[in-house]
Length: 421
Figure (cartoon, rainbow, N blue to C red):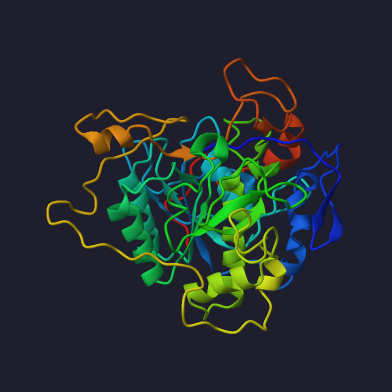
C-alpha cells in the first residue's frame, strides 16, 4: 500500500491555532518534523516519553545500526525464510520500511539532525515478516509479540479488503485483545488498496488510522471507511532509513503507514503514564480525547477524530468497563479447516498473484496481496526518479550523513549484540 508525497506548506492548523510547519528551506531533520508541532508532542513528552513500554513493529525488520534507534531495540522475531531470527535487519532493501516506522515511534531525537519519535524512551520489538508476508505470518507475528511482552503492536502493512482470513487475522487480534495488547494499523492508501480500509486495519478491535494532510484535514490518498478509529498526519513525514537505502539515512514520504506509527507512539505514551490501564482504557483515552473533525461524531474520514497526544495523557478521563470500539467475534471453526489453512497471500511491492488456481476462492484471493504503505523512488531529494519508479518518496540529501552517522553507537565491531534487555 503506497505512500505519496505532497508539496511543503508554511502553516498547519491544530485545534484552531496556527503552528509552524517545516519551512520550504528546511535544512535539519527536526525542521522537517512538522507533525511534532502540529500535534503538540512536546507538551505530551513533558509528562512521559514512553519509558517501560514495548512496541512491536510488525514489518520488514529494523536496522539496528541507525543512530536514531541505538539502545531502542529488543530482540524480536523473524517469520519466513527471508528473515533473521531476531528481526534486527531491515529486509526491505528499497524502502527500509520497518526502520522508518520504528523511528517515527521511538527515534531518540538527539539533536537537530535526529528523528524524535513520539515515544522516544519506549522499546521497539521488531517482528519481521520479510518482503513477502503471508496472512499466516502476520497472524503468527501478532501472537508472538503478545506472548513476549508487547504492550502495543503497530502494523503498517496490509491488503485490500476481503473476508478470507477470518481464521487467521481475526483470531490473532482477538488473542491480543484478550491478553491486554493494543493493536494499531494503517487504514491503507486509496491508490493501491482502494478507497476502503485495508486488512488487518479493518478487523474489529484494531485501531485503524486514516491519514491527514499538513492542514490536519482528511488526506485524499488515505483509505476511508466505517472502520476508521482515528486519524493522524500522513504526508511528508520524515523517518530514518538504512544507509543502504538512502546515504543520508533519512527519507520523506506520505501514507497511512506513518499515521499508524504516530498513533502507536501515543498509545505507548498512555501505557507509560498509566501502566495500570488495560487495553480498552488505553483505546478509550485515544478516542475520547480525539479532536472531532468532519461530520459530527465518528465518521469514515477521521474516525473519532484527530489524535491528541497531550489530551490523551490527561488525568480526568473516567475508566470504562466495555470496549469503546467493536471487538471481533470469532465464528465457529469448520471441522476440516484449521485457523492457518487458508490461502496464503504475498506481495512484492505491488499486488501479487497467487500461484494457485484450484477454485473460485483462490482465484479471488489471487488479486490480493500485502503491500507496505509506501511508494518509493531511488533518487536524490527533489530530483526526478528513474522511469517506471513511482516518484513519491524522497530521500534527504547526504548533507545529513556527517552529523548523524559519524557515530555508529555501541556496534563498533559492526555486529549487534546477541540480545538487549
